Length: 169
Ligand SMILES: [Cu+2]
Image 1 (cartoon, protein in one colour):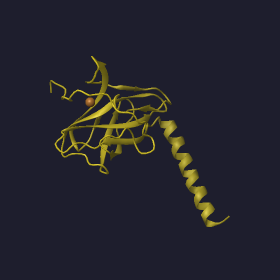
Image 2 (cartoon, helix red, strand yellow):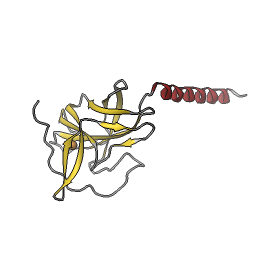
Image 3 (cartoon, protein in one colour):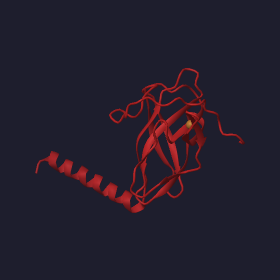
Image 4 (cartoon, protein in one colour):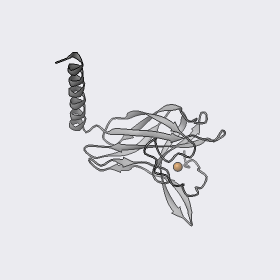
């Protein structure tokens, strides 16, 4: 057995034990975290990702140093216009990936410290009902992107009402 084969085998073993551990602890998996670039003076942006809980959980909130607040939002069609409203939590059925995407559930970022530029990366901490908070890296895509590279579904988003922060804070 060559050294290269040994290394590959060791890596594979490590990867397998890692996913086994994740399944045992019910640790959530998060992938394809991305955000749209924002116009120069925009104070709000949105982040999207895919999250999977092996044992079932609930996404209850998010936080990031690049925005004053991050809120779970959903979108509904009202009179032909998409309107956003805050969402208290998002159920994560056991073993089923849940994808946040433009025009649907998203993580709204209010009070951006600076515009999000394509190619930027920023940390986002996700909060869950059961699992410990989880920090992921969000990659900023183009201003009209519909998804992370290779996963873009295409099609234009419907017209969207201007976002407003939730009241009563
Ligand atoms: Cu929103």
